[in-house]
Amino acid sequence: MSDTPIEAPTTQPNSSSEPQASYVKLAMRNMVRKRGTSLKHFFLTTAGLLALLVGLSYLTR
Image: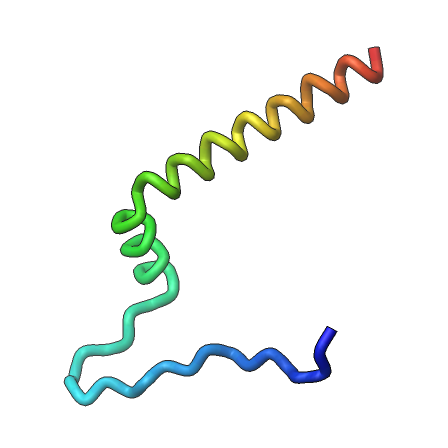
């Protein structure tokens, strides 16, 4: 591992008078833009959790 610290992303100040978008708004906009990837990750997570629960219930019966 390197010894360089990870820096937080910096945002450029807007020259316009509109306020900066919140992280929630940016995340929602990103999810809408990348709909296929978000749906794929959602279904993979759902399948993984379901497999985990079924596996645990099988082992503990």
